[in-house]
Image (cartoon, rainbow, N blue to C red; front, side, top):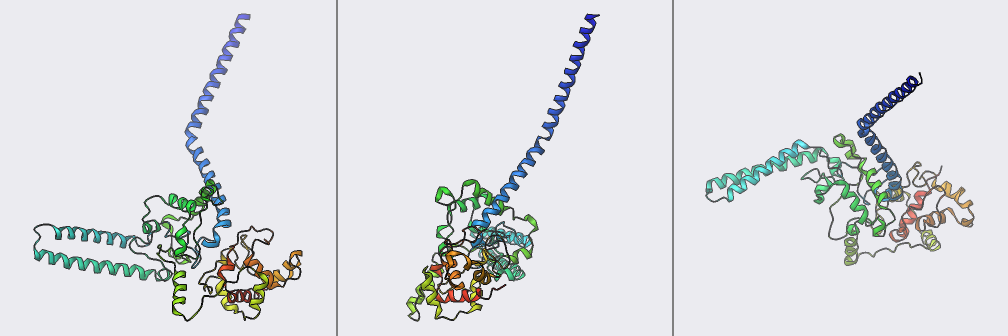
Length: 393
C-alpha cells in the first residue's frame, strides 16, 4: 500500500514536471515568435521619445533662425520643414525625360569625337544636340512656371537643385548631413546669412550633448512626408536654402556705400539703455516700418533681417511672450517689478531688446538673440518701439 502511494506521488510529480516543461517551452516559443514585434514596439517608443525631446530642444535653440514651424525665416535661415531638404521631386516625369535626353547627348558627343565620324554625321549630331538642349530648356521653363510662387522665393526645381543634398554634392545620408551640421556648425555661413550657423556640440564648444543633437535630428526627420509632399507644403516655405557665396552681401553693400561717398554707415544703438532712450527721443518712429522689421519683411539700417517672429508670435506659443499685448504688459505688469522702478514702458522694451538676459519673463527661457545692439540703428529701434506701442490688449 505504502509503495503504491509512493509510486503515485512520483508519477504525479513527473506529470507536473512534464506539464511545467511543456508550458515553459510554449512560453519560450511564443516569446521567440513575438520578439521581433516586441523589439519593434520598443524601437518605436524610443523614437517617439527622441522626437518629443528633439521638439523641445528645437523650440529652445533653433526657432530663432529656422522659425517655430521649421519653415525658415526670410533673410535669416533656410527651412528645414521643407520638401527640398528631403529631396522631393514634384516633377519626376520631367526629370526622367531630361535624364534620358542628357544621356543621349553624352552618346552623341562620344560618337562625334570618335575616329572615323564623317563631317556630314558631325553636322547631324550638332543639330540633334541643339534640338535636345532646346527641349531641355523648354522642359525646365515649364516646371519652373508651374511652381512660380515658390521660384519667386528662391526655389529651383531644375537640375537636382530641388534636393538640398544633391545641390551640395553630399554623398552621405540625410541623417549624417544634419548631425554633422549640428556638431560643427557652418562658420562660413556668415558670408551669405546675417549670422553664422554655430557649432552646437559640446565637443566643439557648443551647449548640447551628442544624444541631444541626435534627438533634434530625429525631430527634423519626422517632418518628412515621403511621397506625400504637396505644392501647398512647398508654397508654405518662407526661406529656401542658398548656395554658399564667396563674399557676404552685407559686407559688399557696406563697401559700396563707402566707395560711393553718398552715405555713411549708420552706427548701431549699442546696449546703453539711457543713451538709446535719449537717442530715439528726437526721432519719429514709423510703426509700419517697425512692423515690417519685426516680421522680417524689411532689413535694418545695417542690412540685417530680424527674426522676432521665430519666438514672438501674435498668439502664445510657449517659446517667447506673445506679440499681442506687449505694450500693455510692459506698462501694467513689468513696471510693477522692483527692478523697473522709474522706467518708462519704452525703456523696458529697449532693455528687453538689447539686454535680454537681464530680465527673463517668468515661464520662459533665456533664448533671445543677444546682439540686437549691434544690428539695430537708432531709427530701427524707434520704428520697432512705435510698432510695439500699437500692441495693446
